[in-house]
Length: 273
Length: 288
Image (cartoon, rainbow over all chains, first blue to last red):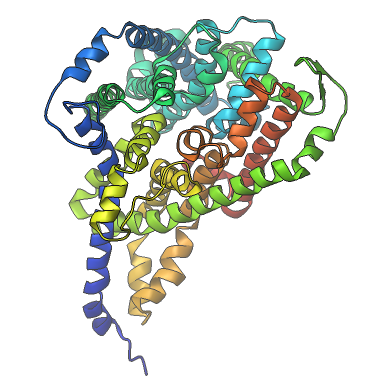
């Protein structure tokens, strides 16, 4: 066939690109993790230096706990996160049910609005909400923060729950109704238990998004209320300090525990369902 | 379907009204409001007169602002390109060479993705900052330079921070696209005599295009609107559109011009999505 670069010869040469690829992948993982590790490492430094190691100490964690403004910011983030998650999870689940179980006029529009909300640059969402609240003469503060957080969390919950619903057997709901269950009974006894892992996953996602949000909160928070990310931002602007490293470590570790732990429980529940 | 009826309509209305009210009132109406404001005229003390003044849009041709817009597009494009160049080989590696570690490897990409953008930018503030900073000491240790360089508060620092922050946004859709890949196509191409290189460019890469486009949009759009990274790593000389918008709303109080900039950013997104739908198809939008 005049094909000198035939398969077998080529596969022999393939070892070198494979090794290069392996080295490259290793380097990318180092790139992804080294900065985070450096941050965590220097949170245990004994002096105020965040770049030169001088010895082990946990004093910055102690300072963090004694800082009342950090604690207040943490409390506010928790209140906002839990409230926004509860509201967004309910609305998002209802929306997912409507979109996956019904056909109606304007469905494409609803769909598009939901996806648009997930990809709209945060700064656009932030300033448009600021303009809206000022025009509506709503005072900026915890209420406006919660409203904004619910608005950007709804879409994510809807998408996650809908994915779960699309994998569900509709005949189970039909069977329940044929056996005389009311729509509400069917929902509570059949549909909800089946989609619960999806609902919980959506709620978990909503909580992390709300807890981590900086940009949108920055525009709608007003002067008095500072969530944890806003507090961290003002600390960074003030200057690099190992206290920020300690705070970053606490935030990162708890987010990871929440997601990995939550994900594990959900995966187990998902298998049973 | 035979389900239509009064009860059905009521139930649907019940399911849909919360989202309609919330997203309508707190997402769509505010967007329409800034669209209206973008054609308004800012008063000296921050008030706004509605009307039809295209002047806010024409302002972007002012050399001062044009420079910022061009810089933003260049940085966002560069970031997208670098994420693609780094992310594609990694996604390829995970999908085809990951074997039984595939899920662990993709989880390791997702973990930094879940930690806040703010903290990831701070990590680079620490590393790049100062003459005796970690990056400077590493460069001198490797004999790349013999004297400390100014690393932070440069456009390069912004690109560095952005690639670091947005890389997972590129890898995840690429992985999703490659994951669906049918191995038999690759085998068929090689059985028919195509080299590995050839197989990649003629079979694997074209089939992963939806992932490439989705990843590029997911990186390009937020990086064009980014304001935290240029704020912390760019300093006063690397102002991007995001910083300009923030200034218009918080210090300059020219809300009309700020709105026009925000509307243009949103228009960029709409354009990108239309491009995606045309190239890949609307039905695949859910995968993003």
